[in-house]
Length: 291
Image 1 (cartoon, rainbow, N blue to C red):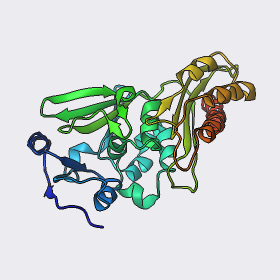
Image 2: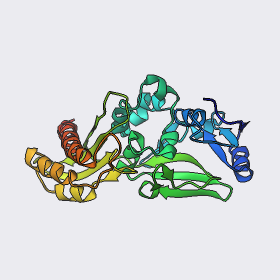
Image 3: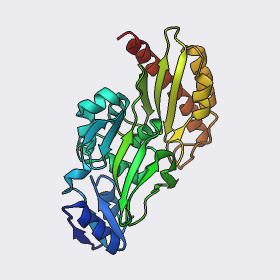
C-alpha cells in the first residue's frame, strides 16, 4: 500500500518551520521517519502536509552547560550512542539505546521522534523520565517548557499542539558517584519491549542507598516512575533483601494488557526487571564510589 497524496515541505529555518505549522492544517512532522513512514504507507495516518525537519541543523546536537545535558530533538539515536557527552554524563541512555531496534533504525531514528511518537514500549522516553527531564517546545506563540511527567496525555498522545514542535530535551545528570542499569525483556533483541526497567542508584561507604530513581517502560501508556519504591529504598542496604522487596512492590503496578501479553505477565516481568536493573546499578555504584 502507498500513502495517500500529501504536499511535501522542506523548511530551512525555524522561522520557516513555525510559519508552516501556523498555517497548514493536518500536517505531520518528519524526523527520522521510522514510525511515520510505515504509518503513512499503511494509511494509519493520512496527512495533507508532511513537513521535513532534516534540513534544520539547529535542532540536532548535544551540549553540557550549567549541570544540564541538552539534546536537540533531531539528534540521531546512533549519534547519541557514540556521543562522549552522553557517555560521560548519561551512560544509562547509551545502554538503553542498545535495545532500540537495530543499527539501521538507530541511524535514522531521532530522540525527539521517539518522544513525540510516545510508544508505550519506547526506551528513550523512559530515560528522560528517569531524570525528570524538561522539554522545550516551539510554536507560533513562542517557546514553552513541559516537564516529562506532564508529557503523556494519553495513548501515543504527547503534550504537543498541532502547530508546535519539540526542539530540545534537557536532563540534569546526578553529580554524586552513582550506578545505573537498564534491562529489558522482548521476544527478540530489537523488538518492542514487553517490559523494560531503568535505574539510577547512589550508595554510601556502608553500602546504604542514599538516592534512587526507577522507571518502567512497556507497562503503561507512558513511562512509569516507581516513586514510592524509590522512597522505600532510601536508607536500606543495597542487597538482595531490599531489591527483592522493591521487586515485590513493582509487581503490584497496574499494567497494560493487550492481545499478546496479559497484565499479570507484565506485572511479573516488572518485578524481575526492576530487581535486575537494581543489581546492575548497585554493582556500578560501588565501582563508581572507589574511582
